[in-house]
Image 1: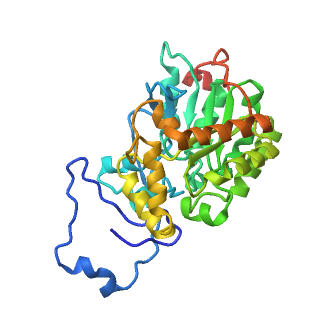
Image 2 (image 1 turned 30 degrees about the horizontal axis):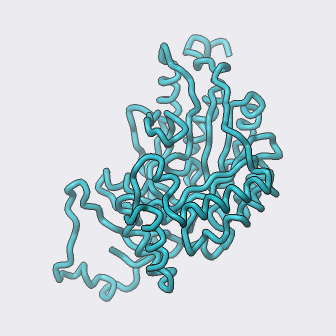
Image 3 (image 1 turned 90 degrees about the vertical axis):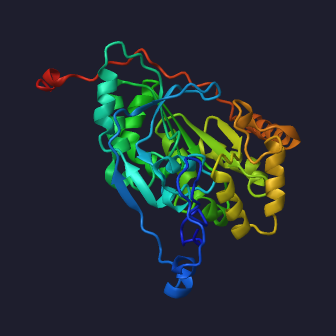
Length: 357
């Protein structure tokens, strides 16, 4: 464990023991007193390693998730959102879901090549591919690696439907691809805004764009004709829940068509990381926040059950839903279900066709 680093979300590098990996315990050696010996820790640098997966399409059969396939161009996320449910995935690689998750990242530069192979398979049936289901496809390293951009170029060429969820205004970089796809009914974007308070956002999501930049991105996307929704996920009781109506008002002003929300989820290692974050930033209400979360989650830190995990339960969850839906009706954020087209799909051209381009 380490103390919080500047501009990072996790307050510690929580080690996981879920996969029988060794966890270091204090034993009286110099490592236990390294700060006293060496001084305060230096700022952590972000490192990026290359990952070479065998496939790029992740299949999903969860009954409460509205897509059956997704692409994750990166593993880990520099945004550093303390609540991120994807943090435990770093434990699979003997890395910490804490600071390692937001500083030791993996890029998949062969993603577009692998995707081309998937789309070229005989019998491939197109359905919307979701980006941003695990880590943000437009996190800072996308500026240089452009893995997401490469995939979008291929999908635009193939007229394949996609959805994008992000909290980065970098998505507007790709309006040149997304706007023509929107005209064909092939794309929908969801921008995540969890708080309009810059101080809260800075500790919740330290390396994500500011709330104002995200709302500006909503306006820019909708002006370009790209259907855009707002996501208030997660809603954190006693910290951000009071902002629900205000966030929806700003989203409607920016042109969002619809909205969604999810109460905070704390699976596996996220729960102790979140509690440590509360103790650091909100010690005056940490116990209250956790008590409300447990009331939302059937007396537990987290509810992993299908359907209820996305909705929460009990009076606090009911109150959030009433407030949310009442505001959405008032503001016209009532866009229906997404109906992206699949009939326009055409497989990527083979090597011979490329000769005639």
